[in-house]
Image 1 (cartoon, rainbow, N blue to C red):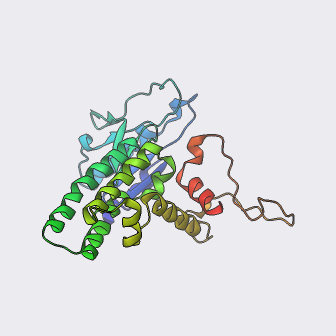
Image 2: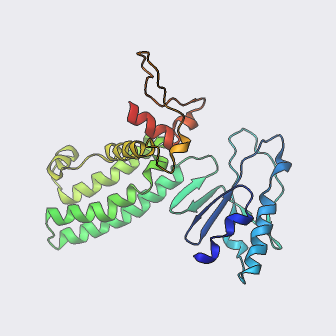
Length: 260
C-alpha cells in the first residue's frame, strides 16, 4: 500500500484511492472536450508504474462517461500503453454498481440477488431448530447488512419499485422466522424497523455528522443561514436545487431529511 501513496502526484484531476483500487475522474465543459487531461493522466500513471517495476492490466481498467443530455457526445478513446480501454455503461466500484446515468436499478438488483441467496441460511437454521433470537441475529448480520451497504449513497435516488424490491427481502426473512404472522406483527415482536425507515435514520445520522465543521465532507455544505430575522430558513443549510438529480444526491438528500 505504501508504494501507491504517490500516485496522486501524477494525476491531473480528482483521484480516489482505497487499498489497491484507484479511480481517477475529471469534469469539463461539453463545448471544450479537447481540454480533457485524462489521457495525459493515464500516460503518467503508466510511466509511474513502469518506474516502480509494476505492470498495469488494461483489461481491468475501465472508462465510464457520465453525461445526462439526450445525445451522447463523442470522445476520443482512452489508451493505456497500446491498449484501448473498454467503455462501460455500468461498473462495480467498491461494492457499488454505478451506471452512467447515476441510476440505481442495477445496484438494487444486485443487492436483492445477493440477499436472496443468503436467505437460504435462515431456512436451513430454522429447519434445524434455531431459536427466534438466533435467526434474528443471523438475519441482521448476513442479510440486512447486505441490503444497507453504503445506503447513504443511493437512498435518495431509489424509485418506489426499488424500495418495494428491497423491502420484500425483509418480508421474506420475517416470514421464515414467523411463518404465520403478518409483516407488521413480526416487526413489532422482533423490535425491527422497516428497511426504508432504517435507511432514513442512517442518512439522518450521516447528515448530523457532516454538518460538524471538523468532518472531512463538511466543505460540501453551503454556509448555514444565520441572521436576526425569524424566518423558516434561519439556521438552515440552503442548497440551490435545479434538478431532481441534485435533490437526490447523497449529501443534499441527507441534509434535507435532517432538516425536515
